[in-house]
Structures are given as structure tokens and as C-alpha cells.
Amino acid sequence: MEYDHESDDGYSGRPNKSAAKREMQALQELARQLVELAPSELSRLSLPERVQVAVEEFGRIKAREAIRRHMSYLAKLLRDYPVDGLEELLGDREKKAQLETARFRRAEMWRERLIRQPDTLQDLVSEAPALDAASLKPLIEQAAREKASGVKSKGAGKTLFRLLFEAL
Image (cartoon, rainbow, N blue to C red; front, side, top):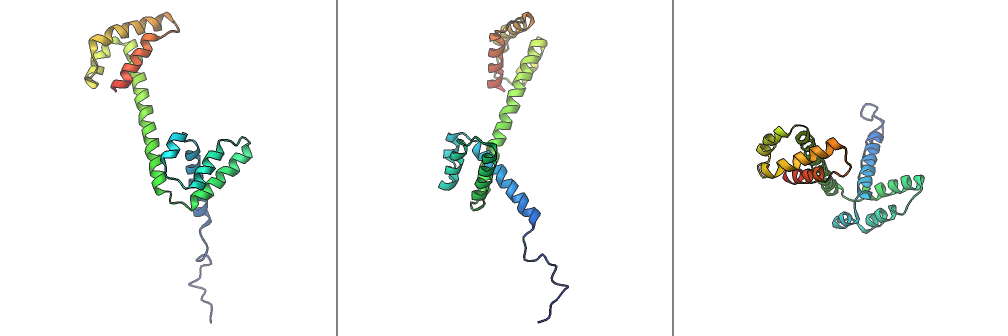
């Protein structure tokens, strides 16, 4: 049998090393997300028992190098598990967290804006019609007085924030 140099590029039977590294890094990131989940969220996922036990064991590990090794082990276990659905669930969870953070920041921004410029209340009411301008006005004035006086107890500011957070 004659060897055909043109058809053999030398790499046909081997997996791409860079692609394998990228895949392993993605699995390690997925493992990191799993160990950050609360136990109640973890129980809702349908993980194989070995993966679930490995995630639970992670909480007991304190040494830095042991944490790194265990994360690699967890990624190795995930290699044998179809992670597409898991990635989607964790991605949805992350999107919800991002939306919640954006909502929190928006409520903070509106609170600060209302305290500095109380006349912007009508802009807020047009954006969130569920809010009652008449009940918010005294709360905004009280929060502005608390902020101006430098008093640590910011009851009105906190109450204003809660109302804005719920409405936005």
C-alpha cells in the first residue's frame, strides 16, 4: 500500500487541542455556576447523583488547591452529562438576576432624582402610572430633609425606594 501524502494532513485523527481546552473551560465555568447555586435551586435541577454529590462536597472544601482540583473534577463529571438544558436554565437564571439588578438601579436612580428634583415626580408617574403622586410627595419631602440633615436613619428614603422598586 502506498502512502498518500496529499490526503493526510497529519491531524485527521486527533481532536483539536484548542477546541478541547475551550470546551473544558466552558464546563469549568458551568461547574462554577453550579456551586454558586443555593441548595433549593440545586435540588430543582435534574442532575445525576454523582454531580449532585460533588457539588455538595464543594461547600466543605476550604483549601485553595483542593477547590481548584474539585472544580476540575466537577467539570470532568459534567463532560459525560448533556449540559445544553443545564446551560439554558443557568442562563435564564443569570438573565433574571441581570433584570433584577437593572430594576434595582432604576429605582435607586429615581429615588435620588426625586430627592434632588422633586418636580420630576410627574415624569415618574407617567412612566409608572400605578404610583400615586399625592402619597409620594410628602415621602419625597421627608427623604430630602433626612438627606440634607445627614441623619443616618433614612426611613423615608428606604420607604420611597421600596415603593419605587415595587412599581418599576
